[in-house]
Length: 428
Length: 104
Ligand SMILES: Cc1cc2nc3c(=O)[nH]c(=O)nc-3n(C[C@H](O)[C@H](O)[C@H](O)COP(=O)(O)OP(=O)(O)OC[C@H]3O[C@@H](n4cnc5c(N)ncnc54)[C@H](O)[C@@H]3O)c2cc1C
Image 1 (cartoon, rainbow over the protein chains, first blue to last red):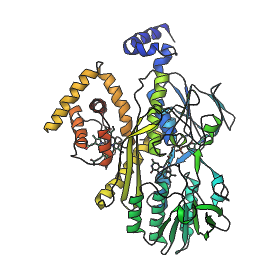
Image 2: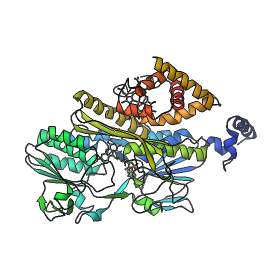
Image 3: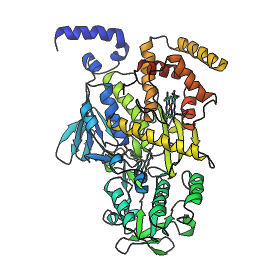
Image 4: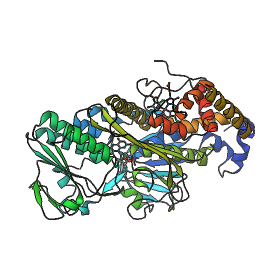
Protein backbone atom coordinates (compact mmCIF):
# COMPACT_ATOMS: atom_id res chain seq x y z
CA UNK A 1 0.00 0.00 0.00
CA UNK A 2 1.30 3.45 -0.84
CA UNK A 3 1.92 6.05 1.83
CA UNK A 4 -0.70 8.26 0.37
CA UNK A 5 -3.51 5.82 0.55
CA UNK A 6 -2.63 4.92 4.10
CA UNK A 7 -2.74 8.55 5.10
CA UNK A 8 -6.08 9.09 3.46
CA UNK A 9 -7.32 6.05 5.14
CA UNK A 10 -6.29 7.19 8.59
CA UNK A 11 -8.05 10.47 8.12
CA UNK A 12 -11.22 8.69 7.16
CA UNK A 13 -10.94 6.37 10.06
CA UNK A 14 -10.36 9.22 12.46
CA UNK A 15 -13.67 10.68 11.52
CA UNK A 16 -15.72 7.58 11.34
CA UNK A 17 -14.66 5.05 13.87
CA UNK A 18 -11.50 5.72 15.84
CA UNK A 19 -13.05 4.58 19.09
CA UNK A 20 -13.95 1.15 17.82
CA UNK A 21 -10.71 0.84 15.89
CA UNK A 22 -8.73 1.29 19.08
CA UNK A 23 -10.33 -1.78 20.55
CA UNK A 24 -9.50 -4.10 17.68
CA UNK A 25 -6.30 -6.04 17.45
CA UNK A 26 -6.09 -5.84 13.68
CA UNK A 27 -4.22 -3.00 12.00
CA UNK A 28 -6.21 0.00 10.95
CA UNK A 29 -6.02 -0.63 7.23
CA UNK A 30 -7.15 -4.19 7.58
CA UNK A 31 -9.92 -3.03 9.81
CA UNK A 32 -11.76 -0.83 7.37
CA UNK A 33 -11.34 -3.09 4.36
CA UNK A 34 -12.32 -6.09 6.33
CA UNK A 35 -9.40 -8.46 6.45
CA UNK A 36 -9.34 -12.00 7.60
CA UNK A 37 -10.51 -15.44 6.72
CA UNK A 38 -13.98 -16.72 7.38
CA UNK A 39 -14.72 -20.37 6.71
CA UNK A 40 -18.32 -21.55 6.70
CA UNK A 41 -19.09 -25.27 6.73
CA UNK A 42 -22.49 -26.21 5.34
CA UNK A 43 -24.26 -24.27 2.59
CA UNK A 44 -27.83 -24.56 3.83
CA UNK A 45 -30.28 -22.23 5.53
CA UNK A 46 -27.75 -21.10 8.13
CA UNK A 47 -24.40 -21.33 6.33
CA UNK A 48 -25.52 -19.98 2.96
CA UNK A 49 -27.02 -16.92 4.61
CA UNK A 50 -23.93 -16.25 6.75
CA UNK A 51 -21.58 -16.55 3.75
CA UNK A 52 -23.77 -14.15 1.75
CA UNK A 53 -24.15 -11.51 4.45
CA UNK A 54 -20.52 -11.55 5.59
CA UNK A 55 -19.21 -11.18 2.04
CA UNK A 56 -21.76 -8.50 1.23
CA UNK A 57 -21.01 -6.64 4.46
CA UNK A 58 -17.23 -6.63 3.96
CA UNK A 59 -16.12 -7.60 0.45
CA UNK A 60 -12.49 -7.48 1.63
CA UNK A 61 -12.97 -10.55 3.79
CA UNK A 62 -11.91 -13.89 2.40
CA UNK A 63 -15.07 -16.01 2.71
CA UNK A 64 -14.98 -19.73 1.90
CA UNK A 65 -18.10 -21.88 1.95
CA UNK A 66 -17.48 -25.61 2.20
CA UNK A 67 -20.50 -27.61 1.07
CA UNK A 68 -20.60 -31.33 0.38
CA UNK A 69 -23.05 -31.08 -2.53
CA UNK A 70 -22.92 -29.04 -5.72
CA UNK A 71 -26.62 -28.21 -5.42
CA UNK A 72 -28.96 -27.80 -2.48
CA UNK A 73 -32.50 -29.15 -2.39
CA UNK A 74 -34.52 -27.46 0.33
CA UNK A 75 -36.32 -29.57 2.88
CA UNK A 76 -38.78 -26.72 3.08
CA UNK A 77 -41.42 -27.26 0.42
CA UNK A 78 -40.15 -30.81 -0.18
CA UNK A 79 -43.44 -31.98 1.32
CA UNK A 80 -45.24 -29.85 -1.27
CA UNK A 81 -43.28 -31.70 -3.93
CA UNK A 82 -44.57 -34.99 -2.48
CA UNK A 83 -48.11 -33.62 -2.56
CA UNK A 84 -47.77 -32.53 -6.18
CA UNK A 85 -47.84 -28.79 -5.44
CA UNK A 86 -44.23 -28.02 -6.33
CA UNK A 87 -41.69 -29.37 -8.83
CA UNK A 88 -38.36 -30.86 -7.78
CA UNK A 89 -36.51 -28.29 -9.87
CA UNK A 90 -38.21 -25.44 -8.06
CA UNK A 91 -36.80 -26.59 -4.72
CA UNK A 92 -33.26 -27.17 -5.98
CA UNK A 93 -30.72 -24.35 -5.97
CA UNK A 94 -27.20 -23.71 -7.21
CA UNK A 95 -24.42 -21.78 -5.52
CA UNK A 96 -23.86 -19.52 -8.55
CA UNK A 97 -25.14 -16.37 -6.83
CA UNK A 98 -22.75 -16.81 -3.91
CA UNK A 99 -19.86 -17.48 -6.29
CA UNK A 100 -20.72 -14.36 -8.25
CA UNK A 101 -20.63 -12.33 -5.06
CA UNK A 102 -17.07 -13.52 -4.46
CA UNK A 103 -17.65 -16.30 -1.94
CA UNK A 104 -15.25 -19.17 -2.60
CA UNK A 105 -17.56 -22.14 -2.81
CA UNK A 106 -15.70 -25.42 -2.31
CA UNK A 107 -17.61 -28.59 -3.09
CA UNK A 108 -16.04 -30.96 -0.60
CA UNK A 109 -16.72 -32.55 2.76
CA UNK A 110 -15.04 -31.14 5.88
CA UNK A 111 -13.55 -33.94 7.95
CA UNK A 112 -11.43 -32.17 10.56
CA UNK A 113 -11.12 -28.99 12.60
CA UNK A 114 -7.96 -28.07 14.48
CA UNK A 115 -9.12 -25.29 16.76
CA UNK A 116 -5.60 -24.67 18.16
CA UNK A 117 -4.07 -24.09 14.73
CA UNK A 118 -7.37 -22.71 13.42
CA UNK A 119 -7.53 -24.92 10.37
CA UNK A 120 -10.12 -27.09 8.66
CA UNK A 121 -9.27 -30.16 6.63
CA UNK A 122 -11.35 -31.41 3.74
CA UNK A 123 -11.79 -34.93 2.41
CA UNK A 124 -10.18 -33.86 -0.88
CA UNK A 125 -6.95 -33.03 0.96
CA UNK A 126 -7.22 -29.24 1.18
CA UNK A 127 -6.43 -27.44 4.43
CA UNK A 128 -8.10 -24.08 5.05
CA UNK A 129 -7.09 -21.64 7.76
CA UNK A 130 -9.59 -19.37 9.45
CA UNK A 131 -9.92 -16.41 11.77
CA UNK A 132 -13.57 -17.22 12.37
CA UNK A 133 -15.19 -20.59 11.66
CA UNK A 134 -18.93 -20.96 11.21
CA UNK A 135 -20.43 -24.44 11.52
CA UNK A 136 -23.90 -25.02 10.07
CA UNK A 137 -23.91 -28.70 9.06
CA UNK A 138 -27.53 -29.43 9.90
CA UNK A 139 -28.35 -32.89 11.23
CA UNK A 140 -27.19 -36.48 11.14
CA UNK A 141 -29.34 -39.49 11.99
CA UNK A 142 -29.08 -41.66 15.08
CA UNK A 143 -29.56 -44.93 13.27
CA UNK A 144 -29.40 -47.04 16.41
CA UNK A 145 -32.86 -45.97 17.59
CA UNK A 146 -34.76 -48.29 15.23
CA UNK A 147 -33.48 -51.85 14.89
CA UNK A 148 -32.76 -52.80 11.29
CA UNK A 149 -32.81 -49.20 10.02
CA UNK A 150 -29.62 -47.78 8.55
CA UNK A 151 -28.28 -45.98 5.51
CA UNK A 152 -28.93 -49.05 3.32
CA UNK A 153 -32.44 -49.68 4.62
CA UNK A 154 -33.20 -45.99 3.97
CA UNK A 155 -32.95 -46.70 0.24
CA UNK A 156 -36.01 -48.92 0.55
CA UNK A 157 -37.72 -47.14 3.41
CA UNK A 158 -36.73 -43.52 2.83
CA UNK A 159 -36.54 -40.98 5.64
CA UNK A 160 -36.65 -38.11 3.14
CA UNK A 161 -35.56 -35.92 6.03
CA UNK A 162 -32.51 -34.65 4.19
CA UNK A 163 -33.95 -33.47 0.92
CA UNK A 164 -32.70 -34.61 -2.49
CA UNK A 165 -32.42 -38.20 -3.65
CA UNK A 166 -34.25 -39.40 -0.55
CA UNK A 167 -37.24 -37.20 -1.34
CA UNK A 168 -37.29 -38.49 -4.90
CA UNK A 169 -37.26 -42.11 -3.72
CA UNK A 170 -40.28 -41.48 -1.51
CA UNK A 171 -42.10 -39.70 -4.33
CA UNK A 172 -41.41 -42.54 -6.79
CA UNK A 173 -42.56 -45.15 -4.32
CA UNK A 174 -45.83 -43.31 -3.77
CA UNK A 175 -46.31 -43.08 -7.52
CA UNK A 176 -45.57 -46.77 -8.01
CA UNK A 177 -47.87 -47.90 -5.19
CA UNK A 178 -51.15 -49.62 -6.03
CA UNK A 179 -54.47 -48.00 -5.16
CA UNK A 180 -55.71 -49.24 -1.81
CA UNK A 181 -52.15 -49.53 -0.49
CA UNK A 182 -50.77 -48.78 2.97
CA UNK A 183 -48.24 -46.08 3.71
CA UNK A 184 -46.62 -46.18 7.12
CA UNK A 185 -44.92 -43.20 8.64
CA UNK A 186 -42.70 -43.15 11.72
CA UNK A 187 -42.03 -39.59 12.94
CA UNK A 188 -38.89 -39.04 15.00
CA UNK A 189 -38.53 -38.51 18.74
CA UNK A 190 -37.75 -34.99 20.05
CA UNK A 191 -35.79 -32.89 19.33
CA UNK A 192 -35.76 -32.94 15.54
CA UNK A 193 -35.67 -30.49 12.64
CA UNK A 194 -38.94 -28.86 11.71
CA UNK A 195 -41.44 -29.90 14.40
CA UNK A 196 -44.46 -29.62 12.04
CA UNK A 197 -42.53 -31.34 9.19
CA UNK A 198 -43.80 -34.91 9.60
CA UNK A 199 -47.40 -33.72 9.94
CA UNK A 200 -47.26 -31.45 6.93
CA UNK A 201 -45.80 -34.45 5.14
CA UNK A 202 -48.67 -36.66 6.28
CA UNK A 203 -51.07 -34.04 4.91
CA UNK A 204 -49.26 -33.86 1.58
CA UNK A 205 -48.99 -37.64 1.18
CA UNK A 206 -52.70 -37.88 1.97
CA UNK A 207 -53.46 -35.20 -0.63
CA UNK A 208 -51.55 -37.24 -3.19
CA UNK A 209 -53.27 -40.48 -2.21
CA UNK A 210 -56.71 -38.89 -2.25
CA UNK A 211 -56.22 -37.60 -5.79
CA UNK A 212 -54.31 -40.58 -7.22
CA UNK A 213 -54.60 -43.75 -5.17
CA UNK A 214 -58.19 -44.23 -4.01
CA UNK A 215 -58.73 -46.47 -1.02
CA UNK A 216 -55.18 -46.06 0.30
CA UNK A 217 -54.29 -45.44 3.94
CA UNK A 218 -51.60 -43.58 5.79
CA UNK A 219 -50.84 -44.85 9.28
CA UNK A 220 -48.66 -42.68 11.53
CA UNK A 221 -47.02 -44.58 14.40
CA UNK A 222 -45.91 -41.66 16.51
CA UNK A 223 -43.42 -42.07 19.35
CA UNK A 224 -44.73 -38.79 20.79
CA UNK A 225 -48.12 -38.22 22.47
CA UNK A 226 -48.51 -34.76 20.94
CA UNK A 227 -47.11 -32.70 18.11
CA UNK A 228 -46.75 -29.21 16.66
CA UNK A 229 -49.92 -27.44 15.47
CA UNK A 230 -51.81 -30.63 16.42
CA UNK A 231 -55.28 -29.11 16.71
CA UNK A 232 -54.89 -27.42 13.32
CA UNK A 233 -53.59 -30.52 11.57
CA UNK A 234 -56.20 -32.79 13.10
CA UNK A 235 -58.97 -30.39 12.14
CA UNK A 236 -57.64 -30.45 8.57
CA UNK A 237 -57.29 -34.24 8.51
CA UNK A 238 -60.83 -34.62 9.79
CA UNK A 239 -62.13 -32.36 7.04
CA UNK A 240 -60.05 -33.67 4.14
CA UNK A 241 -58.49 -37.03 4.90
CA UNK A 242 -60.81 -38.70 7.38
CA UNK A 243 -60.63 -42.08 5.63
CA UNK A 244 -56.95 -41.85 4.84
CA UNK A 245 -54.88 -40.65 7.82
CA UNK A 246 -54.80 -42.62 11.02
CA UNK A 247 -52.56 -41.10 13.71
CA UNK A 248 -51.66 -43.62 16.40
CA UNK A 249 -50.25 -42.24 19.67
CA UNK A 250 -47.42 -44.09 21.47
CA UNK A 251 -49.54 -45.52 24.31
CA UNK A 252 -51.35 -47.69 21.77
CA UNK A 253 -48.19 -49.14 20.21
CA UNK A 254 -45.68 -49.37 23.02
CA UNK A 255 -43.86 -46.25 21.82
CA UNK A 256 -44.08 -46.34 18.03
CA UNK A 257 -41.87 -48.18 15.53
CA UNK A 258 -38.93 -49.99 17.16
CA UNK A 259 -37.84 -52.32 14.39
CA UNK A 260 -38.01 -52.57 10.61
CA UNK A 261 -37.28 -55.22 8.00
CA UNK A 262 -36.61 -53.24 4.85
CA UNK A 263 -36.55 -56.32 2.57
CA UNK A 264 -39.84 -57.66 3.85
CA UNK A 265 -41.23 -54.07 4.03
CA UNK A 266 -42.50 -54.59 7.56
CA UNK A 267 -42.37 -52.43 10.64
CA UNK A 268 -42.70 -53.66 14.20
CA UNK A 269 -43.99 -51.48 17.02
CA UNK A 270 -42.88 -51.47 20.66
CA UNK A 271 -45.66 -53.83 21.68
CA UNK A 272 -44.56 -56.38 19.09
CA UNK A 273 -47.16 -55.88 16.38
CA UNK A 274 -45.73 -56.28 12.87
CA UNK A 275 -47.38 -54.47 9.98
CA UNK A 276 -46.70 -54.75 6.25
CA UNK A 277 -46.28 -51.51 4.33
CA UNK A 278 -46.36 -50.67 0.66
CA UNK A 279 -44.42 -47.52 1.36
CA UNK A 280 -42.63 -46.81 4.64
CA UNK A 281 -41.34 -43.37 5.59
CA UNK A 282 -39.11 -43.93 8.61
CA UNK A 283 -37.66 -40.79 10.19
CA UNK A 284 -34.99 -41.59 12.77
CA UNK A 285 -33.94 -39.56 15.81
CA UNK A 286 -31.38 -36.86 15.08
CA UNK A 287 -28.23 -35.19 16.29
CA UNK A 288 -26.00 -32.37 15.07
CA UNK A 289 -23.93 -33.02 11.91
CA UNK A 290 -20.68 -34.86 12.53
CA UNK A 291 -18.26 -31.97 12.05
CA UNK A 292 -19.39 -30.14 15.21
CA UNK A 293 -18.55 -33.22 17.28
CA UNK A 294 -15.15 -33.48 15.60
CA UNK A 295 -14.57 -29.79 16.34
CA UNK A 296 -15.31 -30.32 20.04
CA UNK A 297 -18.32 -28.00 20.00
CA UNK A 298 -20.97 -30.48 21.13
CA UNK A 299 -22.24 -31.47 24.50
CA UNK A 300 -24.07 -34.72 23.83
CA UNK A 301 -26.01 -34.60 20.59
CA UNK A 302 -26.12 -30.83 20.05
CA UNK A 303 -23.99 -27.71 20.54
CA UNK A 304 -24.37 -25.23 23.36
CA UNK A 305 -24.09 -21.63 22.20
CA UNK A 306 -24.01 -18.14 23.66
CA UNK A 307 -27.52 -16.77 23.03
CA UNK A 308 -26.26 -13.30 22.14
CA UNK A 309 -24.42 -14.38 18.97
CA UNK A 310 -24.41 -18.20 18.58
CA UNK A 311 -20.71 -18.44 19.30
CA UNK A 312 -19.78 -21.83 20.72
CA UNK A 313 -19.58 -21.94 24.51
CA UNK A 314 -16.90 -24.60 24.12
CA UNK A 315 -14.46 -23.54 21.42
CA UNK A 316 -13.13 -20.05 20.73
CA UNK A 317 -13.63 -18.38 17.33
CA UNK A 318 -16.28 -20.90 16.28
CA UNK A 319 -19.97 -20.23 15.78
CA UNK A 320 -22.56 -22.99 15.55
CA UNK A 321 -25.99 -22.18 14.18
CA UNK A 322 -29.05 -23.78 12.67
CA UNK A 323 -30.20 -27.30 13.48
CA UNK A 324 -26.84 -28.25 15.03
CA UNK A 325 -27.12 -25.71 17.85
CA UNK A 326 -29.08 -25.80 21.08
CA UNK A 327 -31.16 -22.76 20.23
CA UNK A 328 -33.96 -23.39 22.73
CA UNK A 329 -36.57 -21.96 22.70
CA UNK A 330 -36.24 -21.60 18.92
CA UNK A 331 -37.31 -24.65 16.94
CA UNK A 332 -34.94 -26.22 14.45
CA UNK A 333 -36.16 -24.65 11.23
CA UNK A 334 -34.83 -23.02 8.11
CA UNK A 335 -36.39 -19.74 9.16
CA UNK A 336 -34.67 -19.96 12.56
CA UNK A 337 -31.30 -20.79 10.95
CA UNK A 338 -31.66 -17.84 8.57
CA UNK A 339 -32.53 -15.56 11.47
CA UNK A 340 -29.58 -16.76 13.55
CA UNK A 341 -27.34 -16.23 10.52
CA UNK A 342 -28.03 -12.50 10.61
CA UNK A 343 -26.81 -12.25 14.18
CA UNK A 344 -23.76 -14.42 13.43
CA UNK A 345 -22.91 -12.31 10.37
CA UNK A 346 -23.18 -9.13 12.45
CA UNK A 347 -20.87 -10.63 15.06
CA UNK A 348 -18.29 -11.75 12.47
CA UNK A 349 -18.39 -8.35 10.78
CA UNK A 350 -17.93 -6.66 14.14
CA UNK A 351 -14.90 -8.82 14.90
CA UNK A 352 -13.18 -8.65 11.50
CA UNK A 353 -14.45 -5.54 9.74
CA UNK A 354 -15.09 -3.05 12.52
CA UNK A 355 -18.86 -2.99 12.09
CA UNK A 356 -21.01 -2.17 15.04
CA UNK A 357 -22.40 -5.12 16.94
CA UNK A 358 -26.11 -4.78 17.64
CA UNK A 359 -28.22 -6.66 20.19
CA UNK A 360 -29.49 -10.01 18.91
CA UNK A 361 -33.06 -10.40 17.65
CA UNK A 362 -34.42 -13.67 16.42
CA UNK A 363 -37.62 -14.78 14.78
CA UNK A 364 -39.22 -17.90 13.42
CA UNK A 365 -42.28 -18.65 11.32
CA UNK A 366 -43.20 -22.12 10.08
CA UNK A 367 -45.93 -22.42 7.50
CA UNK A 368 -47.49 -25.77 6.69
CA UNK A 369 -49.80 -26.77 3.88
CA UNK A 370 -52.69 -29.07 4.86
CA UNK A 371 -54.51 -29.27 1.53
CA UNK A 372 -54.65 -27.15 -1.61
CA UNK A 373 -54.55 -23.43 -0.65
CA UNK A 374 -55.04 -24.38 3.00
CA UNK A 375 -52.01 -22.98 4.80
CA UNK A 376 -51.39 -22.53 8.52
CA UNK A 377 -48.55 -20.90 10.41
CA UNK A 378 -46.91 -20.71 13.80
CA UNK A 379 -44.26 -18.22 14.79
CA UNK A 380 -42.50 -16.30 17.51
CA UNK A 381 -40.09 -13.48 18.24
CA UNK A 382 -37.08 -14.25 20.44
CA UNK A 383 -34.36 -12.47 22.32
CA UNK A 384 -31.09 -13.52 23.91
CA UNK A 385 -31.65 -14.53 27.52
CA UNK A 386 -28.91 -15.20 30.05
CA UNK A 387 -28.43 -18.86 29.20
CA UNK A 388 -30.90 -19.50 26.41
CA UNK A 389 -32.88 -17.86 23.64
CA UNK A 390 -36.12 -16.62 25.22
CA UNK A 391 -39.53 -16.17 23.61
CA UNK A 392 -40.71 -12.55 23.52
CA UNK A 393 -44.06 -13.23 21.86
CA UNK A 394 -45.72 -15.90 19.75
CA UNK A 395 -48.67 -16.53 17.45
CA UNK A 396 -50.43 -19.42 15.73
CA UNK A 397 -53.21 -19.81 13.14
CA UNK A 398 -56.62 -20.56 14.57
CA UNK A 399 -58.92 -23.49 13.97
CA UNK A 400 -62.01 -22.61 11.98
CA UNK A 401 -60.37 -19.89 9.89
CA UNK A 402 -61.98 -18.90 6.58
CA UNK A 403 -60.80 -20.41 3.31
CA UNK A 404 -59.73 -16.98 2.22
CA UNK A 405 -57.50 -16.55 5.27
CA UNK A 406 -55.94 -19.98 4.73
CA UNK A 407 -55.25 -19.17 1.10
CA UNK A 408 -53.59 -15.90 2.06
CA UNK A 409 -51.44 -17.80 4.59
CA UNK A 410 -50.40 -20.29 1.91
CA UNK A 411 -49.58 -17.50 -0.53
CA UNK A 412 -47.49 -15.79 2.11
CA UNK A 413 -45.42 -18.95 2.38
CA UNK A 414 -44.72 -18.83 -1.37
CA UNK A 415 -43.29 -15.32 -1.06
CA UNK A 416 -41.33 -16.29 2.03
CA UNK A 417 -39.81 -19.25 0.18
CA UNK A 418 -38.57 -17.01 -2.63
CA UNK A 419 -37.26 -14.34 -0.28
CA UNK A 420 -35.46 -16.81 1.93
CA UNK A 421 -33.86 -18.88 -0.79
CA UNK A 422 -32.79 -15.64 -2.52
CA UNK A 423 -31.03 -14.70 0.66
CA UNK A 424 -29.47 -18.12 1.25
CA UNK A 425 -28.00 -18.29 -2.23
CA UNK A 426 -27.54 -14.57 -3.00
CA UNK A 427 -30.01 -14.72 -5.88
CA UNK A 428 -32.38 -12.15 -7.30
CA UNK B 1 -55.07 9.40 12.75
CA UNK B 2 -54.60 11.14 16.08
CA UNK B 3 -53.05 7.98 17.42
CA UNK B 4 -50.64 7.80 14.53
CA UNK B 5 -49.67 11.40 14.98
CA UNK B 6 -49.01 10.93 18.67
CA UNK B 7 -46.93 7.92 17.80
CA UNK B 8 -44.91 9.81 15.24
CA UNK B 9 -44.24 12.63 17.67
CA UNK B 10 -43.27 10.23 20.43
CA UNK B 11 -41.01 8.48 18.00
CA UNK B 12 -39.16 11.57 16.99
CA UNK B 13 -38.62 12.66 20.59
CA UNK B 14 -37.30 9.27 21.55
CA UNK B 15 -35.18 9.44 18.48
CA UNK B 16 -33.65 12.76 19.41
CA UNK B 17 -32.85 11.85 22.97
CA UNK B 18 -31.27 8.52 22.33
CA UNK B 19 -29.46 9.05 19.06
CA UNK B 20 -27.06 11.84 19.66
CA UNK B 21 -25.15 10.68 16.61
CA UNK B 22 -25.89 11.31 12.96
CA UNK B 23 -28.36 9.75 10.59
CA UNK B 24 -25.89 7.26 9.20
CA UNK B 25 -25.73 5.49 12.54
CA UNK B 26 -29.50 5.31 12.59
CA UNK B 27 -29.47 3.96 9.08
CA UNK B 28 -26.88 1.32 10.03
CA UNK B 29 -29.07 0.21 12.88
CA UNK B 30 -32.03 0.13 10.51
CA UNK B 31 -30.03 -1.95 8.06
CA UNK B 32 -29.24 -4.47 10.77
CA UNK B 33 -32.88 -4.61 11.91
CA UNK B 34 -34.00 -4.99 8.28
CA UNK B 35 -32.29 -8.37 8.27
CA UNK B 36 -35.36 -9.63 10.04
CA UNK B 37 -37.62 -8.35 7.27
CA UNK B 38 -35.73 -9.84 4.34
CA UNK B 39 -36.69 -13.36 5.38
CA UNK B 40 -40.13 -12.52 3.99
CA UNK B 41 -39.91 -9.24 2.09
CA UNK B 42 -37.87 -8.91 -1.02
CA UNK B 43 -37.52 -6.25 -3.57
CA UNK B 44 -39.74 -7.08 -6.51
CA UNK B 45 -42.18 -9.47 -4.84
CA UNK B 46 -45.55 -7.81 -5.01
CA UNK B 47 -48.06 -10.53 -4.39
CA UNK B 48 -48.90 -11.38 -0.81
CA UNK B 49 -45.82 -9.96 0.86
CA UNK B 50 -45.26 -6.53 -0.66
CA UNK B 51 -41.89 -4.87 -1.16
CA UNK B 52 -41.22 -2.28 1.55
CA UNK B 53 -38.41 -0.19 0.12
CA UNK B 54 -38.74 3.42 -0.95
CA UNK B 55 -41.46 4.58 1.45
CA UNK B 56 -41.17 8.05 2.94
CA UNK B 57 -40.13 7.85 6.58
CA UNK B 58 -43.47 8.97 7.99
CA UNK B 59 -45.50 6.81 5.61
CA UNK B 60 -43.48 3.82 6.67
CA UNK B 61 -43.99 4.56 10.35
CA UNK B 62 -47.73 4.91 9.77
CA UNK B 63 -47.88 1.59 7.98
CA UNK B 64 -46.08 -0.11 10.84
CA UNK B 65 -48.48 1.54 13.24
CA UNK B 66 -51.46 -0.09 11.49
CA UNK B 67 -50.10 -3.46 12.63
CA UNK B 68 -49.64 -2.21 16.18
CA UNK B 69 -53.05 -0.61 16.65
CA UNK B 70 -55.16 -3.46 15.30
CA UNK B 71 -56.16 -1.79 12.04
CA UNK B 72 -54.34 -4.51 10.13
CA UNK B 73 -54.25 -7.99 11.58
CA UNK B 74 -51.87 -10.23 9.72
CA UNK B 75 -50.47 -12.32 12.58
CA UNK B 76 -46.92 -12.49 11.23
CA UNK B 77 -46.73 -8.73 10.69
CA UNK B 78 -48.47 -7.87 13.95
CA UNK B 79 -45.84 -9.96 15.70
CA UNK B 80 -43.06 -8.15 13.83
CA UNK B 81 -44.44 -4.65 14.45
CA UNK B 82 -45.14 -5.25 18.12
CA UNK B 83 -41.67 -6.64 18.74
CA UNK B 84 -40.09 -3.34 17.69
CA UNK B 85 -39.87 -0.21 19.80
CA UNK B 86 -40.31 3.27 18.40
CA UNK B 87 -36.62 3.93 17.90
CA UNK B 88 -36.27 0.70 16.01
CA UNK B 89 -39.21 1.49 13.74
CA UNK B 90 -37.72 4.89 13.09
CA UNK B 91 -34.36 3.35 12.24
CA UNK B 92 -36.07 0.92 9.87
CA UNK B 93 -37.99 3.78 8.27
CA UNK B 94 -34.79 5.72 7.71
CA UNK B 95 -33.08 2.68 6.25
CA UNK B 96 -35.91 1.62 3.92
CA UNK B 97 -36.43 5.21 2.77
CA UNK B 98 -32.80 5.19 1.66
CA UNK B 99 -33.17 2.06 -0.49
CA UNK B 100 -34.39 2.58 -4.03
CA UNK B 101 -36.95 0.10 -5.35
CA UNK B 102 -35.67 -2.15 -8.12
CA UNK B 103 -36.72 -1.28 -11.65
CA UNK B 104 -38.62 -4.19 -13.10
C1 LIG C 1 -39.60 -32.31 5.39
C2 LIG C 1 -39.06 -31.05 5.96
C3 LIG C 1 -39.79 -29.86 5.84
C4 LIG C 1 -39.29 -28.68 6.35
N1 LIG C 1 -40.02 -27.54 6.19
C5 LIG C 1 -39.57 -26.38 6.69
C6 LIG C 1 -40.31 -25.18 6.52
O1 LIG C 1 -41.38 -25.15 5.90
N2 LIG C 1 -39.80 -24.04 7.03
C7 LIG C 1 -38.62 -24.01 7.70
O2 LIG C 1 -38.21 -22.93 8.14
N3 LIG C 1 -37.89 -25.13 7.88
C8 LIG C 1 -38.33 -26.31 7.40
N4 LIG C 1 -37.59 -27.47 7.57
C9 LIG C 1 -36.35 -27.43 8.39
C10 LIG C 1 -35.14 -26.92 7.64
O3 LIG C 1 -34.93 -27.67 6.47
C11 LIG C 1 -33.90 -27.02 8.51
O4 LIG C 1 -34.19 -26.61 9.83
C12 LIG C 1 -32.79 -26.14 7.94
O5 LIG C 1 -32.43 -26.61 6.67
C13 LIG C 1 -31.60 -26.09 8.88
O6 LIG C 1 -30.58 -25.32 8.34
P1 LIG C 1 -29.05 -25.66 8.64
O7 LIG C 1 -28.28 -24.57 7.99
O8 LIG C 1 -28.86 -25.91 10.08
O9 LIG C 1 -28.80 -27.05 7.92
P2 LIG C 1 -29.04 -27.49 6.41
O10 LIG C 1 -29.94 -26.56 5.71
O11 LIG C 1 -29.39 -28.92 6.45
O12 LIG C 1 -27.62 -27.32 5.73
C14 LIG C 1 -26.53 -28.09 6.12
C15 LIG C 1 -25.61 -28.27 4.92
O13 LIG C 1 -24.34 -28.66 5.39
C16 LIG C 1 -23.78 -29.62 4.52
N5 LIG C 1 -22.78 -30.34 5.32
C17 LIG C 1 -22.98 -31.03 6.47
N6 LIG C 1 -21.81 -31.49 6.96
C18 LIG C 1 -20.85 -31.08 6.10
C19 LIG C 1 -19.43 -31.22 6.07
N7 LIG C 1 -18.79 -31.88 7.03
N8 LIG C 1 -18.76 -30.68 5.03
C20 LIG C 1 -19.41 -30.00 4.05
N9 LIG C 1 -20.75 -29.82 4.04
C21 LIG C 1 -21.45 -30.35 5.06
C22 LIG C 1 -24.97 -30.41 4.05
O14 LIG C 1 -24.70 -31.01 2.80
C23 LIG C 1 -26.06 -29.35 3.96
O15 LIG C 1 -26.16 -28.79 2.67
C24 LIG C 1 -38.05 -28.67 7.02
C25 LIG C 1 -37.32 -29.84 7.15
C26 LIG C 1 -37.81 -31.02 6.63
C27 LIG C 1 -36.98 -32.26 6.76
